Every structure is written in structure tokens, then in C-alpha cells.
Length: 203
Image (cartoon, rainbow, N blue to C red):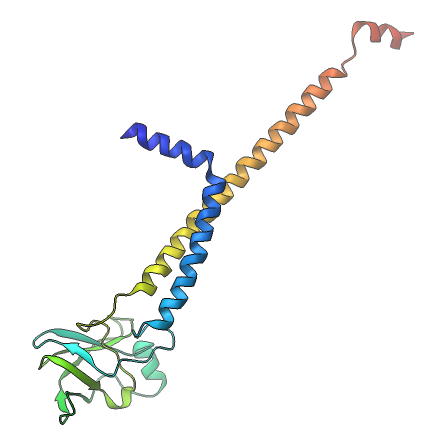
């Protein structure tokens, strides 16, 4: 195990310049995939996303209600998050009042503003009046957060690529300086004054 780790470390050091380029290209690729996924997914944290008309819920399960920008966004619009008038409706039936529990902005500085326990199962539409477009990011049918994954991978690849690239650049600079110093030393040695030359100079 130790020998394998040592061999891997030696390989990375030897080819760090090439690996750095590959990591930077991977970071660009993941950045592009993030933009695509961010535009396709329908979570509260996706840019320009619209919430799905209905979501799948299960009776007795607790879910979060989210608003893009969270408490701060609602407060900027002059809307209080201390109380909510939310309702659920299913299959065109009359809306039923939903009891929600507001979350403290100090405790959850995210898009989530409240929680609720679902009183029914099935596909339902959620309406919270003045809160505007609301999302249930943890609904039963919520898509996996691919955009978040690609964003994290892009950051990791970028950080590692820059670090290895700087390391390779430093090693190359140090090697060039060493070769220049060695060349100067060898060149200087060739022009040393020998015994015969010293006699000529004395004449």
C-alpha cells in the first residue's frame, strides 16, 4: 500500500503539468454541465427555474417549503415569514388549509422558509399566497441535484489543476535557473587563465 502510494505520488510529480491541463479541462467541462443542469432542473436554487405545478407527497412525511432567496428575499418584498397562509389541492378538488411551521432566519439562512407535515398522499399543488412561487425541494419526486454535483466537481478540479500547474511552473523555473547557473559555471571554467596564458599576460 505504501509502495503504491509512493509510486502514485512519483507519477503525479513527474507528469503534473499534463495532469494540471487535464484537470483544468475537466473543470471547464463540469462548469458547462453545471450551466446545462442548472437551467433544466426545477429547484429553488436553480437560476430562473419555475416550480413544478404538482409534486408527489406522502402522508405523515415532513417537507420543506422554499423560496428563491429565502427569508431575505421575502423581507425585501415586505412580506412577513412569521405566518403563512398555505393550502394544498389535489386533482382539481377544493384547496385544503395547510398548517406550516415557519423556520427562523437565524437558524436556516437558506432558501427554506417553513416546514409542514403532509396530510395526504399523491400529486398535489401547493399555494402560499403572497409568498409567490414556492418549491418543495425534498418532495418524493424531486430530481437529484446534478447541478450542485457538477459545481462541486468544477471547483475541485479547478483548485487541483491550478495547484499542480503552479507546482509544475515553479519546478520548470527552478530547473531552468539551475541549468543557466551550471552553464555559466562551465563557461567560466573554460576561460580560466592557464599557466601559458599567465606568461603571455606578464609580457
